[in-house]
Length: 76
Image (cartoon, rainbow, N blue to C red; front, side, top):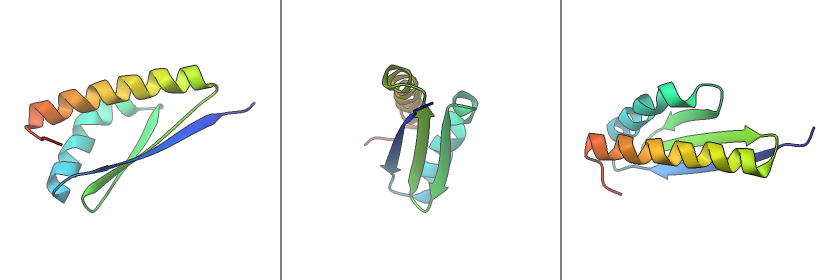
């Protein structure tokens, strides 16, 4: 079965901020998006069976990311 994937790199102005955001996103990522913190960045990888499914996953992830950043007082 063909799959589609997406790789995102999110940069922050400190490793502690990147780690805090990644930790806040952990409960929502399970089975859907892999997240790794490297220095001051979060590296995200998502894969789905079709483009619409991937779009739904990314839309949910970005909504959770926005809430996490706002809650932690992180501005981009």
